[in-house]
Image 1 (cartoon, rainbow, N blue to C red):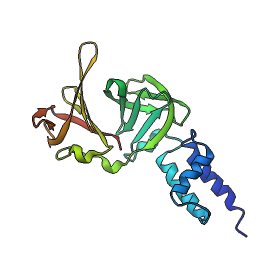
Image 2: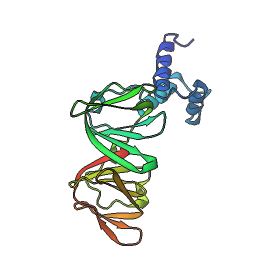
Image 3: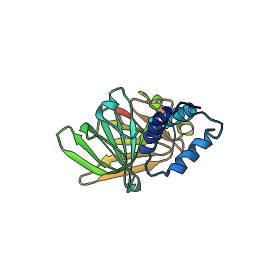
Image 4: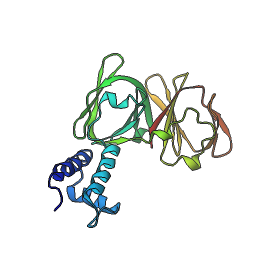
Length: 226
Protein backbone atom coordinates (compact mmCIF):
# COMPACT_ATOMS: atom_id res chain seq x y z
CA UNK A 1 0.00 0.00 0.00
CA UNK A 2 1.26 3.48 -0.88
CA UNK A 3 1.73 5.95 1.96
CA UNK A 4 -1.66 7.64 2.44
CA UNK A 5 0.01 10.75 3.89
CA UNK A 6 1.17 11.64 0.35
CA UNK A 7 -2.40 12.71 -0.52
CA UNK A 8 -2.06 16.15 1.05
CA UNK A 9 1.20 16.82 -0.82
CA UNK A 10 -0.33 15.83 -4.16
CA UNK A 11 -3.46 17.89 -3.57
CA UNK A 12 -1.36 20.92 -2.60
CA UNK A 13 0.55 20.55 -5.87
CA UNK A 14 -2.72 20.37 -7.82
CA UNK A 15 -4.03 23.48 -6.05
CA UNK A 16 -0.78 25.39 -6.66
CA UNK A 17 -0.79 24.69 -10.40
CA UNK A 18 -4.54 25.13 -10.83
CA UNK A 19 -4.67 28.44 -8.92
CA UNK A 20 -2.31 29.96 -11.49
CA UNK A 21 -4.73 29.09 -14.31
CA UNK A 22 -8.17 28.99 -12.66
CA UNK A 23 -9.90 29.43 -16.02
CA UNK A 24 -8.97 25.82 -16.80
CA UNK A 25 -11.13 22.92 -15.68
CA UNK A 26 -9.48 20.20 -13.62
CA UNK A 27 -9.91 17.62 -16.44
CA UNK A 28 -8.16 20.06 -18.80
CA UNK A 29 -5.29 20.46 -16.33
CA UNK A 30 -4.93 16.68 -16.12
CA UNK A 31 -5.14 16.36 -19.91
CA UNK A 32 -2.25 18.85 -20.16
CA UNK A 33 -0.25 16.60 -17.84
CA UNK A 34 -1.07 13.64 -20.10
CA UNK A 35 0.43 15.43 -23.10
CA UNK A 36 3.69 15.55 -21.12
CA UNK A 37 3.64 11.81 -20.53
CA UNK A 38 2.00 11.87 -17.09
CA UNK A 39 -0.49 9.00 -17.30
CA UNK A 40 -1.56 5.64 -15.90
CA UNK A 41 1.97 4.40 -15.33
CA UNK A 42 3.31 7.58 -13.78
CA UNK A 43 4.13 8.00 -10.11
CA UNK A 44 2.70 10.61 -7.79
CA UNK A 45 6.18 12.15 -7.57
CA UNK A 46 6.28 12.62 -11.35
CA UNK A 47 2.91 14.35 -11.24
CA UNK A 48 4.00 16.59 -8.35
CA UNK A 49 7.19 17.57 -10.22
CA UNK A 50 5.21 18.46 -13.35
CA UNK A 51 2.68 20.50 -11.38
CA UNK A 52 5.49 22.34 -9.57
CA UNK A 53 7.00 23.35 -12.92
CA UNK A 54 3.58 24.54 -14.09
CA UNK A 55 3.13 26.59 -10.92
CA UNK A 56 6.53 28.20 -11.54
CA UNK A 57 5.56 29.16 -15.09
CA UNK A 58 2.07 30.38 -14.14
CA UNK A 59 2.28 31.52 -10.49
CA UNK A 60 -0.86 31.83 -8.43
CA UNK A 61 0.49 34.88 -6.62
CA UNK A 62 3.00 37.64 -7.28
CA UNK A 63 4.45 39.95 -4.64
CA UNK A 64 6.86 42.89 -5.10
CA UNK A 65 9.69 40.88 -3.55
CA UNK A 66 9.34 38.25 -6.28
CA UNK A 67 11.02 40.65 -8.72
CA UNK A 68 14.03 41.28 -6.49
CA UNK A 69 16.10 38.61 -8.24
CA UNK A 70 15.65 40.22 -11.67
CA UNK A 71 12.69 38.05 -12.68
CA UNK A 72 10.13 39.38 -15.12
CA UNK A 73 6.44 38.62 -15.57
CA UNK A 74 3.77 39.11 -18.21
CA UNK A 75 0.18 39.75 -17.16
CA UNK A 76 -2.85 39.01 -19.31
CA UNK A 77 -6.08 40.80 -18.40
CA UNK A 78 -9.65 39.54 -18.55
CA UNK A 79 -10.73 42.09 -21.17
CA UNK A 80 -7.60 41.63 -23.33
CA UNK A 81 -7.46 45.41 -23.82
CA UNK A 82 -3.83 45.60 -22.71
CA UNK A 83 -0.84 43.40 -22.10
CA UNK A 84 1.39 44.33 -19.19
CA UNK A 85 4.92 43.32 -18.27
CA UNK A 86 6.84 43.93 -15.05
CA UNK A 87 10.63 43.88 -15.08
CA UNK A 88 13.55 45.86 -13.62
CA UNK A 89 11.21 48.18 -11.66
CA UNK A 90 9.41 49.13 -14.89
CA UNK A 91 5.85 48.62 -16.09
CA UNK A 92 5.40 48.08 -19.82
CA UNK A 93 1.82 48.66 -20.97
CA UNK A 94 1.01 47.64 -24.54
CA UNK A 95 -2.32 48.42 -26.21
CA UNK A 96 -2.45 46.00 -29.18
CA UNK A 97 -5.24 47.61 -31.24
CA UNK A 98 -3.41 50.96 -31.17
CA UNK A 99 0.10 49.47 -31.31
CA UNK A 100 0.96 51.84 -28.48
CA UNK A 101 3.50 51.00 -25.81
CA UNK A 102 4.06 53.06 -22.65
CA UNK A 103 6.84 52.51 -20.11
CA UNK A 104 6.99 53.89 -16.57
CA UNK A 105 8.69 53.07 -13.28
CA UNK A 106 6.69 51.57 -10.44
CA UNK A 107 7.28 51.93 -6.71
CA UNK A 108 5.16 48.98 -5.57
CA UNK A 109 2.08 46.94 -6.35
CA UNK A 110 -0.56 45.06 -4.45
CA UNK A 111 -0.15 41.30 -4.28
CA UNK A 112 -1.38 39.91 -7.60
CA UNK A 113 -3.46 36.82 -8.30
CA UNK A 114 -5.60 35.67 -11.24
CA UNK A 115 -9.16 36.91 -10.87
CA UNK A 116 -8.22 39.94 -8.79
CA UNK A 117 -7.76 43.64 -9.72
CA UNK A 118 -4.33 44.79 -10.87
CA UNK A 119 -3.21 47.86 -8.91
CA UNK A 120 0.29 49.31 -9.44
CA UNK A 121 1.68 52.34 -7.60
CA UNK A 122 4.00 54.68 -9.50
CA UNK A 123 6.92 56.69 -8.14
CA UNK A 124 4.65 59.59 -7.19
CA UNK A 125 2.44 57.37 -5.05
CA UNK A 126 -0.45 57.27 -7.53
CA UNK A 127 -2.36 53.99 -7.83
CA UNK A 128 -3.08 52.77 -11.36
CA UNK A 129 -6.00 50.35 -11.65
CA UNK A 130 -5.41 48.51 -14.90
CA UNK A 131 -8.04 45.77 -14.96
CA UNK A 132 -8.61 42.25 -13.67
CA UNK A 133 -5.81 39.72 -13.98
CA UNK A 134 -6.48 36.60 -16.02
CA UNK A 135 -3.04 35.00 -15.81
CA UNK A 136 0.51 35.67 -14.57
CA UNK A 137 3.29 34.29 -16.77
CA UNK A 138 6.95 34.11 -15.82
CA UNK A 139 9.27 35.35 -18.56
CA UNK A 140 12.39 33.49 -19.69
CA UNK A 141 14.88 35.88 -18.17
CA UNK A 142 17.72 34.37 -20.22
CA UNK A 143 16.32 36.31 -23.18
CA UNK A 144 17.31 39.65 -21.59
CA UNK A 145 19.86 41.66 -23.57
CA UNK A 146 21.91 44.70 -22.65
CA UNK A 147 22.77 45.28 -26.31
CA UNK A 148 20.51 44.61 -29.29
CA UNK A 149 23.32 44.79 -31.82
CA UNK A 150 23.27 41.79 -34.16
CA UNK A 151 19.67 40.81 -33.34
CA UNK A 152 17.74 39.73 -36.44
CA UNK A 153 14.05 39.47 -37.19
CA UNK A 154 14.56 35.90 -38.41
CA UNK A 155 15.71 34.82 -34.93
CA UNK A 156 13.63 36.97 -32.58
CA UNK A 157 10.72 34.50 -32.42
CA UNK A 158 8.14 35.43 -29.78
CA UNK A 159 10.55 37.62 -27.81
CA UNK A 160 9.71 41.33 -27.48
CA UNK A 161 12.20 44.00 -26.46
CA UNK A 162 11.14 47.52 -25.51
CA UNK A 163 13.62 50.38 -25.73
CA UNK A 164 13.23 53.90 -24.38
CA UNK A 165 15.54 56.54 -25.82
CA UNK A 166 17.05 59.72 -24.44
CA UNK A 167 14.56 61.84 -26.41
CA UNK A 168 11.50 60.06 -24.96
CA UNK A 169 10.75 57.74 -27.89
CA UNK A 170 9.58 54.20 -27.08
CA UNK A 171 10.48 51.39 -29.46
CA UNK A 172 8.81 47.97 -29.39
CA UNK A 173 10.94 45.44 -31.27
CA UNK A 174 9.23 42.17 -32.14
CA UNK A 175 8.54 40.70 -35.57
CA UNK A 176 7.81 44.33 -36.43
CA UNK A 177 9.26 47.51 -35.03
CA UNK A 178 6.79 50.03 -33.60
CA UNK A 179 8.12 53.50 -32.86
CA UNK A 180 6.00 55.48 -30.38
CA UNK A 181 6.70 59.22 -30.10
CA UNK A 182 4.86 61.75 -27.97
CA UNK A 183 2.99 64.43 -29.92
CA UNK A 184 1.28 67.43 -28.34
CA UNK A 185 -1.89 65.64 -27.21
CA UNK A 186 -1.40 62.05 -28.32
CA UNK A 187 1.08 59.31 -29.12
CA UNK A 188 2.14 58.83 -32.73
CA UNK A 189 3.02 55.30 -33.83
CA UNK A 190 5.11 54.36 -36.86
CA UNK A 191 5.30 50.68 -37.72
CA UNK A 192 7.96 49.15 -39.97
CA UNK A 193 9.23 45.81 -41.19
CA UNK A 194 12.87 45.26 -40.22
CA UNK A 195 15.63 42.73 -40.80
CA UNK A 196 18.44 43.35 -38.28
CA UNK A 197 19.88 45.68 -35.67
CA UNK A 198 23.01 47.18 -37.17
CA UNK A 199 24.17 49.12 -34.12
CA UNK A 200 22.99 49.46 -30.54
CA UNK A 201 23.99 53.01 -29.61
CA UNK A 202 22.75 54.94 -31.41
CA UNK A 203 20.13 52.34 -32.26
CA UNK A 204 20.31 51.77 -36.00
CA UNK A 205 18.08 49.17 -37.62
CA UNK A 206 17.98 47.90 -41.16
CA UNK A 207 14.50 47.96 -42.67
CA UNK A 208 13.05 45.37 -45.01
CA UNK A 209 13.88 47.44 -48.07
CA UNK A 210 17.56 47.65 -47.16
CA UNK A 211 17.55 51.23 -45.86
CA UNK A 212 18.58 52.01 -42.30
CA UNK A 213 16.86 54.05 -39.60
CA UNK A 214 18.52 55.82 -36.67
CA UNK A 215 16.17 55.58 -33.68
CA UNK A 216 18.29 57.51 -31.18
CA UNK A 217 20.33 56.65 -28.09
CA UNK A 218 18.85 53.90 -25.87
CA UNK A 219 18.25 54.83 -22.22
CA UNK A 220 16.72 51.49 -21.17
CA UNK A 221 16.39 48.08 -22.82
CA UNK A 222 13.63 45.96 -21.28
CA UNK A 223 12.42 42.44 -21.95
CA UNK A 224 8.66 42.65 -22.52
CA UNK A 225 7.66 39.14 -23.64
CA UNK A 226 9.11 35.71 -24.27
